Image (tube, rainbow, N blue to C red; front, side, top):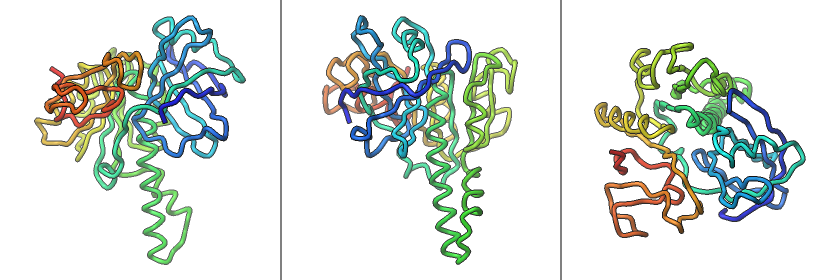
Length: 289
């Protein structure tokens, strides 16, 4: 749904140094039919003095309430302006934008979620979606066996055995980690060694002997390069969510292209637009080197 919508601020709070959580509510008539893990939206700085939207990944989606949650780093003038928002304020949002993770390719497999820095938030929504699918499957199996015990199905869904999350941070401020534990087995890596494994997410994967059938990752480019190489070495299918600066968010400006191994139908060259064909790509289809 690539249109500009006026959203209402429900909550805004700081989770860690320069890391903020923002909840925005749709008007009832604007609630989208579907929001997929890995998609993002363009948030417009309040006041109107900054024209370009800021692309922010969706951290959580509450369909019943029509509420989107974003967790972002207040790094520049635009994102820092979001920290002044208070409940009841209004702001413009463009979206929902981009593609997302294909849950059908993930369910029933051992899924490893890797999030680095501000790449952690979209992994929370993906973990929750996979957990929901696991709970539904457990409920169907219980029903087929004639038990009909909803609480047993819920219990099975609370800790999906196939989902492991490794989250990477700068230091001991492990934002969203406790929330992630509701949906996955969780490990942490920190650059300074103040919590979990000292190093990056792949250091934690190796240290803990974590194995997987498929990897989903979001984080800075050096991390995604390393994850792509690791997946190739291990023969594991991987899906990468790329972080790029964006101006329009709808594929017109071509400011967020990434190199690909196939010819793009839009540009007729080995490029793809992260805002449209992405941000999620199979690792073996993008050239990050």
